[in-house]
Image 1: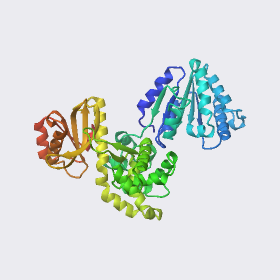
Image 2: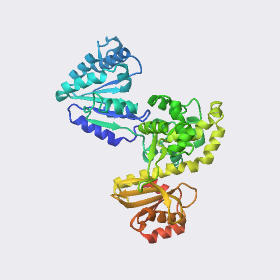
Image 3: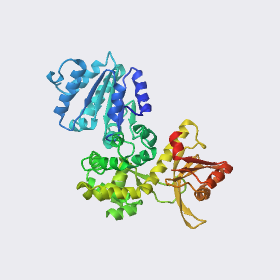
Image 4: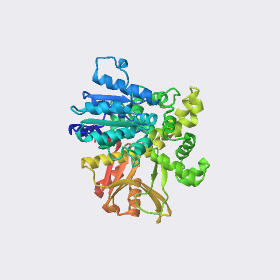
Length: 466
């Protein structure tokens, strides 16, 4: 079953319909569904599909030769066809095939091919420059190494720079798309699954069983034989060297150290070194550096951007010894106890996703240009304060939001606190105040919303059904 990716399919389809040379580049982290997207797009279209392997250039050339042979002679055994003498020769033939007819040529896992033969980007560049004006080739490069694809394919120093006709960074699904993986499961549990593994399709598929949330979690995450158990380590090793030090940085953030100085102290390195590690983790999308949406002077905070990494370092890594001895009970007890608190930031992110979706549909109460958070000092009460969601249009605060993932109704006191804190950074009477609740709202909160005119009460159930 193919889920989502309508915008990406539409982009590729429009390029294909132009019937001229096109060169879209598709990249994204492992397991995010790049190959599935390409297969869906290329279905029933004339396609040479070549997947590079982490081996030498000769093995890759033989595999490419078989892919071409399978395209030209689908009834023959491609293993009986002798390989081409060089990549140059093989690529030239593909460009020739596309002179008269539309041909899709996919090089999946392109970083493996380019590492096996570093001349590949230059060969492709020369052929593109020579043939693109009269070619109907639809060349697609795909890769999972974010750093390689951004620097060696899309970067200014790459021979292929400026040749692409589109680029698609395939990102994990948001929560509302993730719902489609579980048509019969309670949305509250789906939110918790999303909180554990995020929106990577293969990760979500590990929870597509009929068992309880505990059963599925123990099978998917608390089992040393599962594909997710070593996924964070494998992903880090693909992107960085000395992965152990990066593990320490992520672990420190998962433990609640959010400022660079705190992280450096926890890891035991200097400020310059921690700045380098944090920048690299930002670059590959595992850590995000966050500043208040409005105001100046506050130091940025660092948080783990990927739900699987956040969950794994919080609940799996500390109990690895027990898990590896097939005793996941202690880890599950810790998860069960802390899950409501852990889900707080996850719910905030889900609420932000919902607001962007409402904005796209034109049903949001106040249009905004950007969403973020705010934290700072409440000078009136002489204490630190924060707002879960802040929406800004131009330089004005147009909405703020408070998110409560609790098994109790959203109280009036929380709404009053939101109004007070909104006045610290803007005008609460001119902004829309959003109250997001896991369950519902107290009668007092509903009455205040009814008479205020600028308060929106949104329950989790309404977000799902609306």
